[in-house]
Image (cartoon, rainbow, N blue to C red; front, side, top):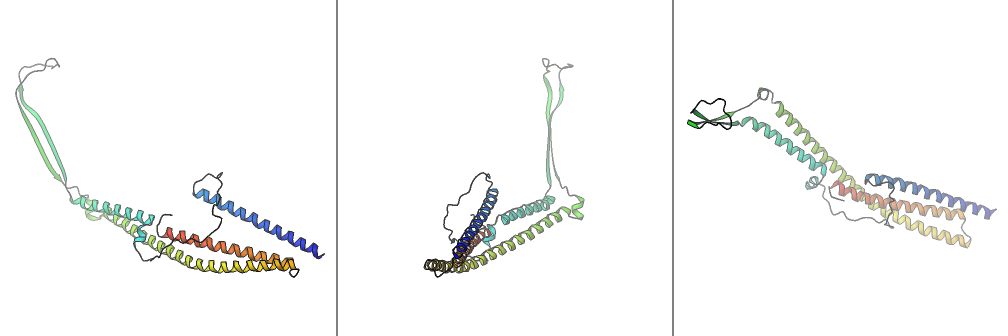
Length: 264
């Protein structure tokens, strides 16, 4: 009965590991499909990881979150600055355009006098010779100010541009606050990630040694099968914790690059 129970426990533990493996495959396929959608890749393409060992990334330099030049690298802040400049130009064009006059120049030229003969109608073959025709011309120059009456009383267009500019300035401040928040969160995640990696790595080493000793004790007959299974379970959980800690740390590294407006 003892040997039979050990075999049943071993089979149950093996099936449990198979179920966990299938769950891992389902999660991988789901994440792979989401990544292909984000990268605009056809779903029939199979993604394969070439990195067998997941290691922590270390490409973030010393960073001061108070540097204003960081904000200039964010694409949304760049777009907001360009839109703000365009609105300021439109406002300046509108206000100064009312003060500038419109210059009109008209010219006129003709001949004045009489022609010899009385030919009517004149055909192309019977063009009379001009006689006593004198050239004459006129030049008219005028300056006009076109000022709408509404602009003298309400300044509607000017107020409209000022309101749009004010909204863009508020939007810019919101983008900067959001960038500061993302940078602060990424730095906090990096600091916590380093501690998590250290703790998870230590736990992984401890459970690996515990599992090795349990297997040796089982060979000597001083350990029961469920003790080995439990040691294996703790070891696998420690591996998962370590991989999750490294993954979160690497994601924080990329999140910091995005928050700083750097290209990936």
